[in-house]
Length: 190
Length: 163
Image (cartoon, rainbow over all chains, first blue to last red; front, side):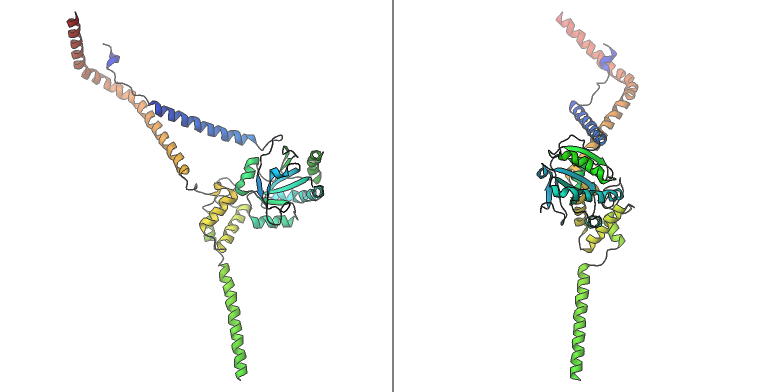
């Protein structure tokens, strides 16, 4: 009889416990990987079809008499989605340009400007809108759902969506001239 | 004389009515909340645009606006829960310093801690087992010897019987 026959039996980790541990570890790694991948993705990329979302509108800034806009209702129009906030100083640099551009395109009925107010307070937002004489539709990004969908990195950011609902251009940071805005809209109207 | 008294009475009455209306409207609006009252709620909320900064100590313009909003809501008679609920609806659940009281908020960390503790326990057990086994090996051998001898004797006896 050899020595090995008298050694104490080794009890391993039960198979069910091993399965739980491995499932947990793999799940944890998957969550971390998804988070890292999302962080590196940046904003929604041009060429992507924009999913439907609904923007509630501040009273006095309704579009077509509606107090909320669904992006799907705007298919067939060029949509300019501008993320801003009243506490954002760079947003002030482009506010007048955006309003001027809106006044130019409004009569055509082919372009819709949407201001998405990112984590802001309504009284301050209204002061901002009044200060820059903004008249196009604006509303709050409730629970940051819209900005999370677009994966914005900050404000201001502007997204140009064509008539088919496909994102065509992303402007990170403020516009410096109205020509910059026109250069993105005009090709989408052809 | 009576006319003069009556006039004075009406003036006094009018003054009282106007004063009553004025104080009535002032009390309906409520007193202006103090910084402490605002900060008591602000410290339970986090700045939605800054990394891990409680609202009561956040120095940005945006945070000042949010503190003003809390002050306005308190003056309007809103309570703590209503204000926190408003912030969650507006800016998302991430503004809360504590997760919402849902079972999953506590279940997932609890399960993770239990699994971690179990893994550590098993790891330590496996780590110390070889040294204990080595020191006990000789004792085990010694203890096992008589049983071993008995077993061998019994086995040999059985074999003899078969022959």
